[in-house]
Amino acid sequence: MGGYEPLYHALYELSSAAVIEEITKSGLRGRGGGGYPTGLKWATVAKMPGKQKYVICNADEGDPGAFMDRSVLESDPHRVLEGMAIAGYAIGANHGFIYVRAEYPLAIQRLTKAIQQAKKYGLLGSQIFESGFDFKIDIRIGAGAFVCGEETALIHSIEGGRGNPRPRPPYPAEVGLWGCPTLINNVETYANITPIIRKGAEWYSSIGTAGSKGTKVFALTGKVQHTGLVEVPMGTTLRQIVEEMGGGVAEGRVKAVQTGGPSGGCIPAVFFDTPVDYESLQQLGTMMGSGGMIVMDDATSMVEIAQFYMDFCRGESCGKCVPCRAGTVQLHEMLTKIVNHQATETDIEQMEALCQMVKEMSLCGLGQSAPNPVLSTLRYFKEEYLARLRPEVETFATAKD
Amino acid sequence: MPALSPQAPPDRLTQHPSSPQDSATCDRHYKTLDTTLKRNHYQPDALIEVLHKAQESFGYLEDEVLLYIARQLKQPLSRVYGVASFYHLFSLKPSGIHNCVVCLGTACYVKGARQILDRLELELAIKVGETTSDGQISLLSARCLGACGLAPAAVFDGEVGGKLTAEDALARLQALTIND
Ligand SMILES: Cc1cc2nc3c(=O)[nH]c(=O)nc-3n(C[C@H](O)[C@H](O)[C@H](O)COP(=O)(O)O)c2cc1C
Ligand code: SF4
Ligand code: FES
Image (cartoon, each protein chain N blue to C red):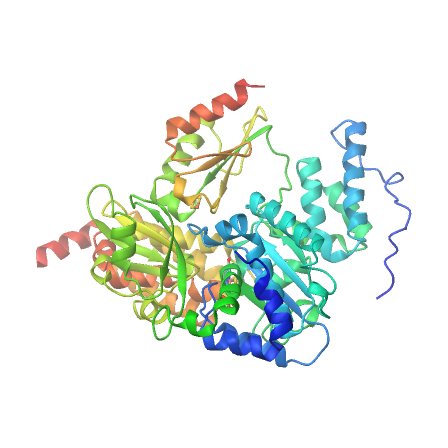
């Protein structure tokens, strides 16, 4: 299917600026969660002074319930390598790193082999396709820390240190790996590069919605009948994904879908006609995230889900800043109190206030978004929280009804 | 940066740590470690890779091994310890002969993984993160194995089991210890 042709085309027929222009025009946005325009990011790194620059591929895929990146790495590693090489050419870097989580041994094995193959055929290494462009790629393996998916933490981890995030700015585009300008993109983002170069920005941007171009891969899991990966054009509705492709739930009713993992939120079934794109998900109080979609039915307690995610964030907080380190512990305690029918309505109010504080004062995305699952379930499923309050309050509520 | 001489004579013979394992196996483990160190030119940024290798050979990261790595990479022990204790996959305690990792990622959680883990904790009389008193089985949990389509999933000595019930999980554990 024309492997490495787009790289050849870029090296011989396009200038670096023209490659960036093409990516910008395509409207591609980062698939790692944030949705930052990829072309703009490339242009920023390309403009930075300095000879040494790096390209990093974020293959940490920490969002539990998501395995899109894993499938790309295992089934088509060359496509990611090629995307990285094109990025290297565009921004003026000759060294790339793929940071893969250690939990994916097969992906690591296939990537290692793919890099060897590419080197053997002169598709990576010095003077690729006998041009003046050199590009090598090394693999770095994580060691089980969710926070290392955050870009500054990931850089510290590649440098062999603890994966503690640092404040941004400066962004990695300016000060990244070993202090050099660094481009970080997600696996799926790189996987989108070769089709854009091969078929052109116009073709790519004809797919999707006004603000979100191209297709997106989702990992459909949970109580849905057909679990697995689906790739759909941006703008497909949740109903099409969950009910048509996923076949709905086996028994009972779909209650909600969780997207965006520990940073995201739940979308109740009444909003299933919403087209999936970055903005509309944000409006619903969740986010696109990396693509995990967990279907929940009536048997799933939303309060317990919120508690589950808070437990996750509590365990994964790197401990560097207090709002996140202490806040997640507090929030988890409050949620446990609610789950165990020991809380009052005041506790819920306090919990909401604490959520706001943790959101606003945490240093990195982990803490900033840790309250999202709580806030989103409170927004749509408050009755489930109220039903779990201390018994006497419950009687009071029913008496009033 | 001062040259980190990769040729520096390994001082491990003089500072050979005492270890519970017999010395021949131990020597072999140190040799593997030395190869990894050398391949990475004793660069401090290879620390995580070196720790992976050390854990793979020794089974866990005992203090002596961390000290040895710190010396070889010419890094303060605090940094080596700091990194080893930061990452969940590094274990500073010995683990059981067999291990069972139950996935507690969202997809598995929604499908009842917590109940499976509760049951295993009950039957093995240990908490997650612990090893049975006979040193046979370590019970661990993971955040997501990337096998969410098979939820609830667990790994038994490196082999993934999917769509599990508590009974399946118990049977798999039994099979592990019987095959010894
Ligand atoms: C706590 C946390 C975890 C993250 N985990 C991942 C991850 O596993 N994979 C990923 O690609 N991006 C992850 N990100 C986002 C990255 O920081 C970064 O935005 C992304 O890799 C940029 O690539 P993109 O522009 O191609 O999306 C995470 C961010 C935070 C705050
Ligand atoms: S927000 Fe949490 S994870 Fe991020 S730096 Fe602070 S403590 Fe660490
Ligand atoms: S959530 Fe268990 S394998 Fe992904």
